Each structure stands twice: as C-alpha cells, then as structure tokens.
Length: 235
Length: 75
Image 1 (cartoon, rainbow over the protein chains, first blue to last red):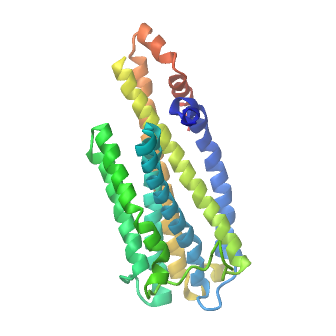
Image 2 (image 1 turned 120 degrees about the vertical axis):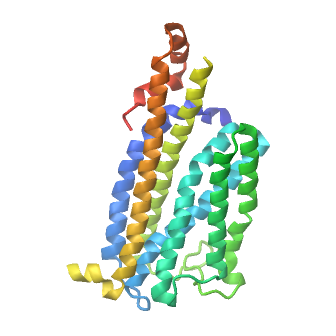
Image 3 (image 1 turned 90 degrees about the vertical axis):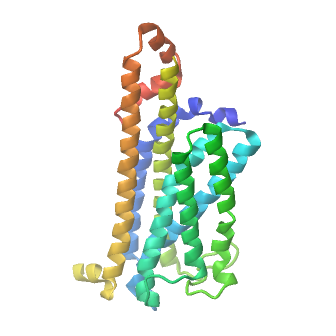
C-alpha cells in the first residue's frame, strides 16, 4: 500500500503543490481575518477580547493534532519499517512547534484581560508548555544525532512518550480545577458557542491547516532534495 | 468605524498583538523554510553541473532528479 506514496513517486505533486496551497492559504486567511477582526460579534462577557480565540484555539488544535500525527507516524515507522514516515514526521514538526508557541503566547495575552494575569501554572497551560518542550526535544534530536537509524529511534521515542501528554491537555480542564475555561466545542454534545463565532473559528482553522500543509510540503521537498544531494555525492 | 476596529472597546492592546504575533510567526517560518529549500535546490544544481557526462546521464535517468531541476527557482 505504501509503495504508492514513496517519495520518488509523489515528488512531482509535492514539488508543484506549495504555490497552489500558498494561494489558497492567502485567500482563506484574508476571509478569516476579516471575519475574526471585523465581522464577528463581540462577546457579551469578554467584549472584543474574545477575538483572540480565533488565533489561539486553531493554533492549539493544530499543534495537538500535529503532535498526535508525529506519534502515529513514529509507531508506523517502527511497525512497517517505512523510512518515509520518519521523513513526514520531521517535515511536520517545525510547523507544529510554531503553532504550539502561538497557542501559548496568544493564550498568555488573552489571560491578561480575562484572568488579570499573563501566566498561571494551571493544568492546561502547564501541559501545553510541556508539549512545547517535547516539540523542542524532538526538533533538537534531529539536529544532534547524525546516524540515521539512531535519530529515527530517538525521535520516535520522544513522540510516543510525548503523546501521553495530549489526552492530559485535552481533559485537564475536566480533571482539575483550572482558570482555563472548559471546551466550548464538542463533536459529541451541543456546542456552547454561537454560529456567528463558530464560522470565523472554522475559517481560521482551515487557514491554519493550509499553512501547516504549506510548510510541511516545503520541508518535505527540502528533505528529499537533501537526500538526492547525498545521492549525487555517491555517484 | 476605524477607531472602533483599532481600539476594540479598549481590548485592541491585547487583540492586535495576538494577531500580529501569529502573522509574524507565520511569515518568519515561511521565509526560513523557503530559504532552506532554495539553498538545497541551488546546491543540487551546482553538484549536478559538476558531474561528468556519464554520471549526469545516470542522475538524469531518475524522475525525481529531473523534477528537482525543472522546479528549481520556481517555488
């Protein structure tokens, strides 16, 4: 099944796709920003401070989703011995890390007008900080270790260990008393967020997902060309 | 209208930095990634150019190498 997704076969697509993804990202982001900053209503409690949600929440969702993907790919790389999984993980990680940082910083900025403080060591925020540390370790490991098999093992272990933190982040607001509000959006139950806010949130999430895809494709192409550069040396 | 958007009922000092930080982070990551990609592409083209005719023929037989050459400087 995986032979159809081998780098040599998909490079024709991955090398051409970034310009189209960039174009789509700019369009969706522009609509999202207009909705988030101008067209969406203010909250009856938080007033205009609620607009920070449109960058904070998608960034947090995508950083969690990306790290979960790293863990799944790492398990896949152990089970199927497929080197492409490690390459995909390596290419996903930088964008995931940046989304994690964005979630932390925008969350901190949002905390000041709503809680009266920039930072508090509560369960949700601390577990998100721990996720950023796992991302940091993952990216550093790719730089530190030079031996290919060793780096794949180490980064896979970091991703698999780190993914234990993902459900902790998700349920931290239910398990502990925290300043952080409980989730407003749920797949299984009714949303406590009005549709006028849900639409901009959806558009901004789509824009952020497109940015993740854009960076992933560019990083993936860079990694493939690096491999091909080494191949030319061996000729 | 313009003042309302900028001031945001006094919350503009929080909202604008949050959005600015996000967009600056996006732009930085995009340009750093693009720079790394073009550096690798240029290195590939330089190495390819230094190959002798026989080795170049072998390298050109791989689809991916032809793709890299045709896509260089386009992204």
